[in-house]
Length: 427
Image (cartoon, rainbow, N blue to C red):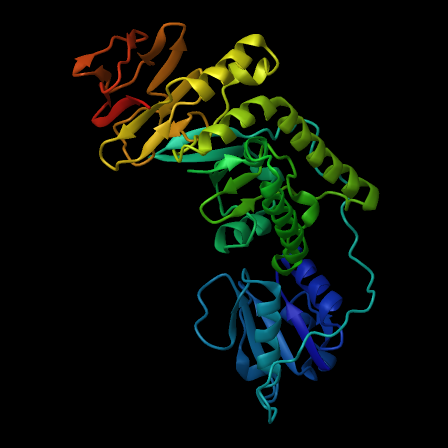
């Protein structure tokens, strides 16, 4: 066991670092804390290593040569003595161990030992979320990217957690940007877990859902390494997002100061709430999902969003008639001329634009296309294209549509959104 002392002016950071070391590496270190350089006494001088935070002016010549000196810093790691504060706790521990072992014959890293049960630091007697907070996110589009944004006053923001979330790629969590009270998380090309489960409710989809739950548990268990608390994960399926390309689910972490730790009952209630919402989504979407499963056999690309009209009336006669029409009649789709991609029109109201959280087909790689550029609308006599006030206009066979003008689509006609061309087809 090495005897160490730590002097860091960031009290919140120091408290969390010491808690982690005592919880997971109690047999490696005997830890002393020092409030200022004036408090360094003979007992501290007998330590194996001293660690100083930013802003502490240290004269190494004052200390015996056999004492290792380390610096916990927010700056770049200039040498072995400098340890970046915002990497994982396990990495910080290993760097501290290397400094302590510098004069030892073996440089092997010390393996983590089974922790004992230390007294946990007292949490502030505050509620997790202040009553005046409304943490429902809003969706915004900036520079062709889509974000979920949460508003957290700077006085209530946990700056240490924000630095961890912005400075590390933590598996299962969004990498965040925080500025002027706004916490931003990029969701470009993703769909909410609620939507994903609503649209993927077959027996073969069950394995993927279970994998998502396993990944969520692994994320929660890994957070302590980054001085984060699993209690501040937002387990709301409408706010959690699935990256289908990577096959992963991302959870928002809400970096608010304070909060009481949740007990087992509260944890189970939160998980139950998550499952209840997912079951609710499956119940609302089941008829539409059956239609999609039939259509997927045609080997055309399905879309990302649900049709609100179908969602709100899943048992209506109109939906049943639509289902039969899709099974028996011509199947409408569009072909993106630039890429050859085929997109199935499997909604009564099919939205086109570049806001992935709002439209049914996202044209994310063309900045000339508006957020909600145009809709394809099903009427009794066929499908119509309607412009929704787009900046760069909508055309059918080269003829511009006025705002909110409906133009009927015929097999083989060309639709143009700004400079993005599609061919409308009926199979």
